[in-house]
Length: 356
Image (cartoon, rainbow, N blue to C red; front, side, top):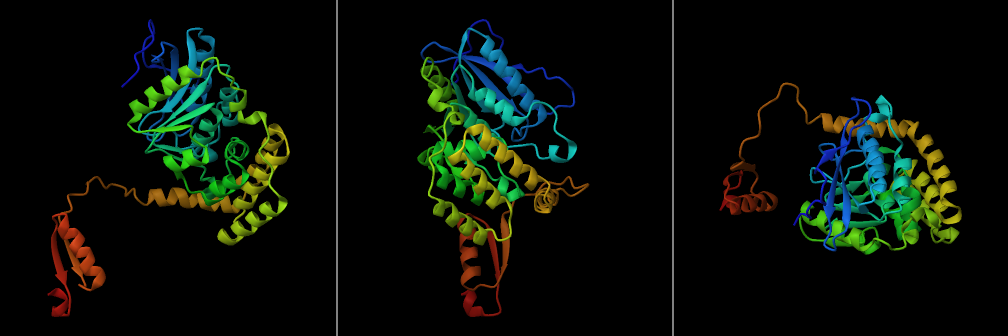
């Protein structure tokens, strides 16, 4: 299923990034599409989920410049390694400091590309990863992929243009629910609301091939309408915004981020993109410094640290037997499910009738 490389180009050349401390990179390849066009394939590579570390951001910037400067390249595809597109920002940089190009600038450069840019999405596309995809002109996804802007769960909002581009793509009201809930959408739903242009079955190789062919077909097309920063989102009546504020004030009582998100989305409907980005930046800075955001981020890391026991190297063995105390409705149901998959089941109950 893999497209063949364009002639006279060494495959999988890695980006050489300034500064050895940068995590992650972006691989640069060339592929030949079904119609014969040469397409640059840019692969974010930062295990396990291609977080947008300094190295990845620098790699995206450098590899875009390379693709635009190569006359043989007619279109560009952006994808991710390790079974994921990109799970978002490297939030460890919040405490260690951010180096390299800023993500909003990187995304703006992709959107401004004179050559068609297609995101080939397999696996998760969350937070900053979803914002990168929004900066691409088109989005091709696998059926197992997911799109989400879950920053609200960290007490933050999408800070790389997500609050401005998403309403311009799918509308303000759906964007409010998408961002304020923090819940990702499966591929079929993401395509239905308009985030993905097309969804295909298959693995990463199939998605990349489809995206390469899709990108090649867009060579010479008018990319203006695909640049989300060039127009304003359709406005909503004031009472709709008021209703949404009340809704999320109740659903996420006491939280600052949902109200800030709605403020940003409202700005996407009544002012130019750059001014809306100013609102997003201002609201993000307020949230970033808040005690809520610090507490939620602490909880995020603490929950993951709990699974790491110092000195523990043993791996779980196979689970082939189970003991259940209580053979009532719930215990009996659990026992039946386990027995059906071949497990040895031992039931304990004070009432012999339950065991019979």
